[in-house]
Image (cartoon, rainbow, N blue to C red; front, side):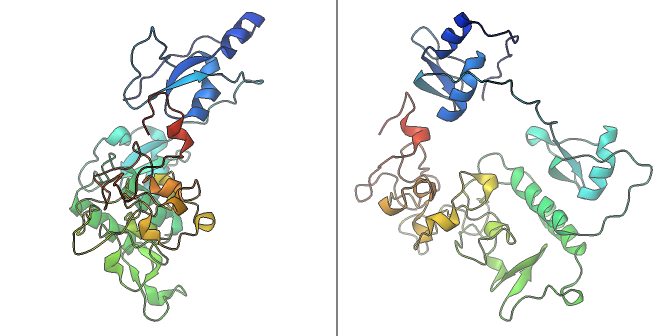
Length: 334
């Protein structure tokens, strides 16, 4: 886990302190830009020859010249929390009282309630106003479904809780015939996703990325999580882990969901074969920032063999790492 470092007291900069801040050292962190921005504050761990190893989850970056900020940083925004409840409206109306249980850091919610992420509480009211169902309700359900994963791709909610949550959202949405939001012929909506019109709703959340629209869109929850490694559910029918030699695949991970970045810039990437992105084999034409460095396939440190269809770094598609957040690490191995 990343180590928390207590900030040092703020002092007026002097010539001595500025010279010290600008001297080059080795620092622990997750990316070069974030280290350059913060290291002048003196709060980052160093990994010089006399220091110990970096905390787990961070890497040693060598010969960093810190940026001295001209102005003090703006005040931090209020910290939002995750709360347990049955609906976003009821949580917003009552969480300011401090009585609602939280579900930060993966804390489980009581049976029958769900974890709603980054909730901004309303002012305390005696009677909570009735809120009509809208797109925010649907999005909050998707956020709670995906944001409670622990890094393996699996949601912390049980299958029964997820199904109940889908039903809860579905019941809050007017019937299809009662609105103008009717799907085109040959498509139908998925439970809980009234704006998602697809030929086969069973393809959503099945553990195999359907990389193109209409599945891989915001309205359809980006194929209900299938197209990003962090949100794909390994307990789904295809299990997010198709391998070379299976009767199906590759599906790849053409991740467009900004919640599970680094996401792909769909317009700039314009990959013709989207299933090649994130399949484990490095494709030079997609090894760009816009295509997420081929979904991580081209770097030893970002190609994940548990999700890769082809063997990472195989002879036919060897590593060719160009991701600056990896190649400038002090411990980088080509």
